[in-house]
Length: 407
Image (cartoon, rainbow, N blue to C red):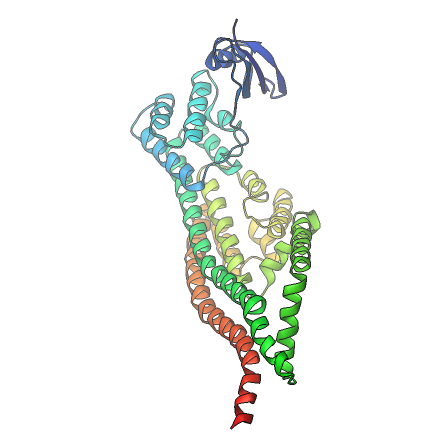
């Protein structure tokens, strides 16, 4: 008796379909479905004659890291550039992959390409792994016969995004650790140190200075109502999370990120670099301007507020206006982007101008991150010293009074 498989997939017309079939193996089941004009996105063995085990392969809902995808893309570009056909390049690439998910994904894509599917259509079955930008550029590369060049550009974009993300996380690590340390020290003082010292003053029945009374009251609250504090903080965090994930909340949050004084400039430079680099790369790869803008206005910038601005600019371009004029009317992106876009439109070199702007703002982001990190370090140290020192001073004040009276 052959194992029974259930499947979900797309038929030749692109509609979703599902069902079950008998097959000797997972590969045989996939081949049967392909012969019926069905591209499976999920195959699950329900029962088997030999093992009776259940297992599932679902590559459409998984993710791989940006750097892993960048390295795989660069390797594929190198293989294609050497003159190797796409199917053979995908086979060689899958053999080099150490990540099991990426290895299995590339193997499945190779099978679909070998069966007659175009590369970009095979990629569309795995949106969690390959973003829209990736798929659109591959489609353009296939149409123009420059797939190796397009993949090389994609690898540079992905590597740049991964490196920049690492820099941002590295810059945020120190401030977060310092704040956690400060929070931990304050809890330690209020929960354990202050109660022990306050007992000494209570036994002497002396009036405590106002700062000491405040610290002792805070200590009593922490000791007696710590559970309430945890609940309140949890509710605040949950409420913020729900608001941030709502349509209005996400818009207001992203708008605040761009407009705030502390790090709004950095966030805008980062978004500008991403906008210019991605748009310039797509245009250089043969993607039409309106198509490229439609991709950028959704999930590429990482900021809903700016995505709405790009959407408004796109509507103007659709009605025959130039991109630079529409960006200027929105009055949110830096003036340099607007000016360079106008020059690119006048000279017919919009892609190269945008890539130059993206490179420039990428350098500015690096400098801003370094400057912000160097500025935050002394501020956090002073903040930690003031908070902890203030608590200790409030606790020591009664001792100083007792010592002065004794003399």
